[in-house]
Length: 126
Length: 237
Image (cartoon, rainbow over the protein chains, first blue to last red):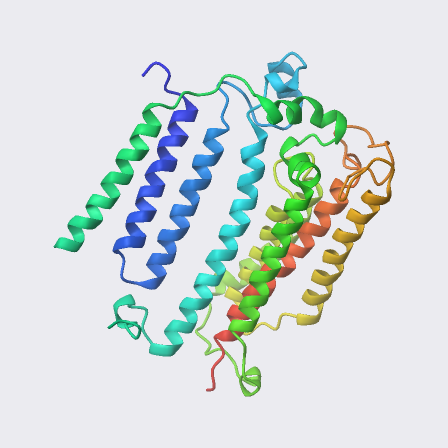
């Protein structure tokens, strides 16, 4: 427990959000609520990826006075890992695209049956 | 009952797997490999104070081009999917009276939001933020505009031209980087080795220009998606 720090906290939050989002996707009946579940899952995964780039006691990877003071002018000794953050930026944009598409489909489904109840869409069930 | 038990089981097993990962996790104490290189050489090679921006726009510029393409694809699929019939084009959204507070506040807030979005994407190489974030802020202004007045007419031509011009310019700047000495596609050394004074607005070579175009394109694309959503609510009265 003595090693409990920011990395552990954000990792824990990421895992919890993934579980909450997954549970929401599995149990909810309303299509909008399922989409909300997907976005929570997405957020959890993003937080998880950023937290894996955390380096103990280091600051954000932006070179300013704070960075130069922490690391004695050696940038790589004073910042957290910038690569996961750059990758998460991509993931967020793709998550946005997926959410926008899901909402468009939900709108179409509602127009077709005037309901968002997922159990009513059983045309492919036998 | 059986269904709920199975669901609980699935979530529990997932939670157990996560717990194992979590309990074996140890916070890193130093950078390694490529991150080490980006952090120590990034300022010198790219000239951007924000190392994340240096990676997104220059080291992994091709990735960003793909990202913008994905966003464009999303906007196109939604345009195709929520296509309006011609006779619906004239009709209006049923007007639920919007609150006076929202209408008045939006008139003050929208110009400030646009300005803030432009600030965020122009300073992407110095401060947290960048093209995607700035574009999203601009699109939030458009969303507020639609909420305040559901029947507002958003000029399609402006959106399409901004989107096309910034997309083409992004690729053209990439080609300029290709033509420069020892620069690759989307290299930021379009002004040669002179990257400008470190930490000022006009530094980091082509990054502010590329990120401004990305910001405009993302803002136009998300506004386009919002506009399609708005139009799909039109119905004959």
